[in-house]
Structures are given as structure tokens and as C-alpha cells.
Amino acid sequence: MNSSVPTALNSVSFLFEMTIIVDTAIWSLALRRNSPEMNSAVVNQLRSLIANGRVIMLGSLRQEILSGVRTSEQFDRLRNTLHAFPD
Image (cartoon, rainbow, N blue to C red; front, side, top):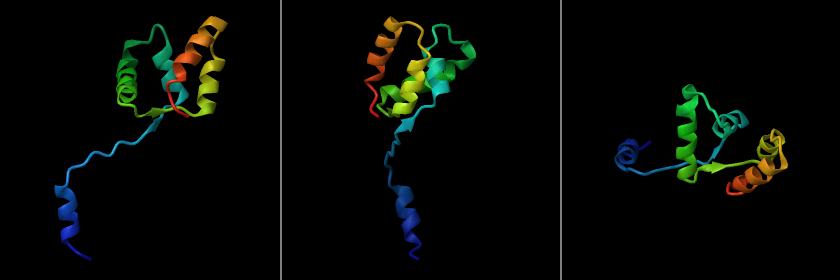
């Protein structure tokens, strides 16, 4: 094994960003109108991931999120917003 490989890899700086599938519980925190302050760090992290285009949404998660909406107006608005996230 070539001992210079790890050294060479350590000297190369690159950015590897993974896409993230966000759990329903996190979406629920973020979508609440009155999210407790203790959850603000989680919500801010989600906002950062969204801003960087790293969030994807599985159809089953989208369905679960939408199933908790009470009115058809809220459902339509949220469904349209969630369409921005790829499956």
C-alpha cells in the first residue's frame, strides 16, 4: 500500500455535499406557526439545508406531512410549497 495516498488525500480540499431526507418530525417543527424557541436550532439547520439545495422529499413523507393539514386551503398552499422539493 502506498503510504503517500493518505497524505495526498489530506492535502486536497474538496466539498462533498450529500442530499438529505428530512424526517416528518423535523418538518412538523419547521411548519408550526408557533415553534418553541428550543427548536430554533433544528429549524435553522433545516432552513440552511433548504437554502443550499440539499433537501429532497420522499413521496411517503410528503403524504404524511399533508395528511396533518386541517383545511383544504392550507393543504393546497402546503402542497404547492412542497412541490419545490424533488422526490
